[in-house]
Image (cartoon, rainbow, N blue to C red; front, side, top):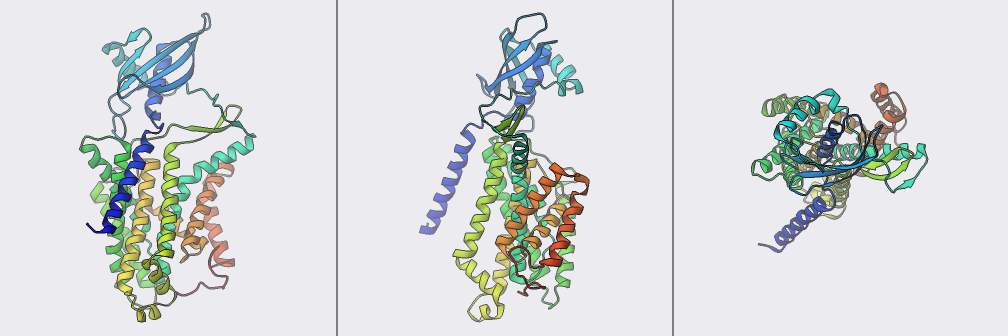
Length: 451
């Protein structure tokens, strides 16, 4: 094996080792399992007010222990605990299936457990009976307005990461060819489907560890996005050499519709969802009873998006591919005279842009659970708006535009009527096209620079 190959293997080993450490560093409580276990407490203590004190890993595999206080109107306060055991863990779809329940008085019989699940947990009353956890976290106190604003910023992190990656895909292709590929939203949906497929392969092999499933999904999403983008872009952009960009634009509309129908046939119209993982909230600040919190999966998806963005900036600035891309974007004829292979560079760029779109689809699955065959259209449209606002053709501008659009959507939903949020976003696009058509990091000329 060559020296560069050994370096790549070492880097992959370090990445997998880091992910393994991440999965073991305190992210041991599954939020969905904790919720199901909490739901049993009112049934175990009818008529009592429940206050959950602590949730921790149970004494056996796939179990949780909840320490709580039961306060009856006419009795002293009781300190009790419940141990819930589940059928599976990780990415398994039946991980929230309760298979055993024990208290300080001993385990429930099979018949009692069946009655509890059948006639309480599976009813609307049971689902609404979650007593929740205590909000006495030892965190800093902040004013209500600041706490609410901070929570909205944290909530926006995954959305901004997804938009930023998708908008850089638009910027990569437009910056090189001067053409817009309208199929990147559908490529994100393909990345989502590939993530589900990769995780399913891991589950079929008998492993249910979330880190392994997400790692397999990540590889599958990158590969699927790159291949579909390179092949589709070759026929819709690479082979259409007309000076006008309209034929290529129409062709990418056809590619978008083709990929949407292709996904509908391959994965069926029914969206497959991964169960939530690493969704137990980390308290960061509080104001009275309101906790500002961040879930581990939100931190992970935002971190992956940031690492991918920084890696892409490094790739464009410090590698031979990046130098060729910048030279060809500035002057294609001069770059060709200096030995840059334009068609090959276009295929490489399309593959890289598709990988970014596929990665955004993987983040959608990790954060939200899944994406339907037609769900990529809205993501692609808003990412295109982000690329235009940031400065289409500028990779840093596209990233900034993705951050701006994600933050705009979150803050508008938090403070203003959500039903007119998209109208406001499209109006903002019109304003930018009128007063600064080059975008925030683009050019101040009244028309965009031809590339």
